Amino acid sequence: MEELLKLDHVSTAFRSRSGLVKAVCDVNFTVAPGQIVGLVGETGCGKSVLGQTILRLLPPGVEQSGRILFQGKDLMTMSEEEIRAVRGKKIAYINQNPTEALNPVLKIGTQLLESLRVCGGLRGGEARRQALEILASLSFDDPEEIMNKYPMELSGGMKQRALTAMAMCGKPPFLIADEPTKGLDALIRGQVIESLEKFVDFTGCSGLIITHDLKFARAMCDTLALMYAGEIVECGPAKKLFSMPKHPYLSALLASMPQNGMHVLKGSSCSLIDMPEGCRFADRCPYADGECRARHPEMRSVGEDRMVRCRRYD
Amino acid sequence: MKRNKENRSLIVKCGVLAFMLLLIVFSKLLFGRGDVVTTAIANTPPCWQHPFGTDNLGRDLLCRSFIGLRLSLLMAFIMQVICLALGVTIGTVVGYAGGILDKLFVFLQNVILSFPGTVLTLCIMLLLGNGIFSMIVALCIFGWLSYARLIRSRVLTLRQANFIKGEIAIGSSLFRIHFFHIVPNVIRTIIPMFTLMIGHMVLAIAGLSFLGFGVQPPNAEIGLMIQDGMTYIRSAPWMFIFPGLVLAVYSILFNTVGDALQDRFDPHDSVNASKM
Image (cartoon, rainbow over all chains, first blue to last red; front, side):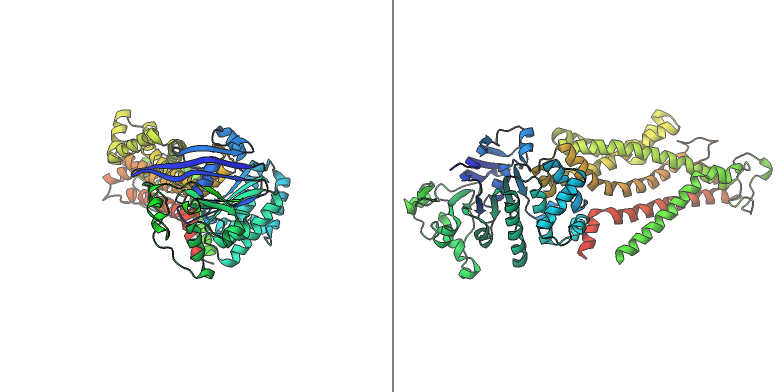
């Protein structure tokens, strides 16, 4: 199977006063054309950092290693010019927190037309037509009116859709959506799912969806990768992961969902500065023994299309 | 509703300011005849012919107040344009570059701010000699700093903003990001500041001229006129009262309009207003 995006031993670390914060450790996965991969995990596990690492959006001075191959080219070693040609045109990025992701002093239309100009090279009347078409396709009732509004005049869900519209401008083959449902209620979450599905229809793209919303991930994604403390602990087809979780962390996450009884997973994620020697989940794991704490488990294949990082599946 | 009312009051304030500025621009046409020495009518108290009275040399005070203010305003405007250009350029460069350049800027800023403003200005005036040019230089040395500080801090915060990250993510160049996203965010803070600062500058010019620096006689200048009036404070009090009043009215006007513009333009306030 030919892959569109391939992450090969990708690590990202931030320097801080108290030491190196290893936000993403040795992540490997691939996305095939037409595939939607969900990156799930709790807050602070490195999902968003990984998303931003791919497009090199992190501030300078961040330590990154590994290879990120997109259509066969390594994004890590590209020059600033080259990566700029990828951003928006090849890989679109939908920022988390739509309230802050739109420039508060420019009208939606201005920002949308600008995206069209930068990503699609369109200007004037043609750009305007395209903008209205995109807005209409995202079920905005009155695109003309939306174009003339400032971000603060829109609701959270509308802002999210406006951001989606901007990402659609370059008709990119790949989309990274960072927490598209954060802080939205169930009704609006439905709208976001719909708008992202339209995005996929419109551009025919594949994507990486970063979320901590398991329900949303199940609705949107073909494949899921579960992250814990900077590394992927389980990945495989979304449906199988939900019906038959392997990693104890995934089982715990599923048990914590409201419809499964909201069982709380005790403890908190380990520090990203002083990593434990063994399994990072050991302190919260009901099955952990001495061996777990002594040796760091590797990802191993379980069945034909699943991988899990737990020594119980040796 | 509240917004409408605010807008109306802003329009009224700007209207008044515009009218008063027109008065100044056309002051020579309107009351230009009075700026001649006519000792015969020296020290005339306010009357129909000379609403503000005349000074010890028989010059019409109404005429001189406005002509004097015209000079001050023109200087203040020129100074602010210089300060703005300097401040915006330096603030932007420093805000983006960061590192050692930024540290240097902060150090320079602390040095300049640690001097009492008036004393430093007077020192510079002493070094450069009296006159309009040296006054502009002396006041600009302080003036650019306030713009640069403002722009720097805005650039620093905006650089971290999510929408700038989004902008990078669609592949925009640094230049485009700056002029399309940073500048519109900053301009709304600058317009009110510019207005406020013109008011301050007019006062500063008057102050320096009052002390005998800056504008020299026989040019008309408010500070100078007030100083002249001090000599005749008992026999002809109108000589300092009216120029003082004109100065006060104009600086209050600039401050009011500046404040109103700030309320209207500052995005932080408008965000808060939308939440209410």
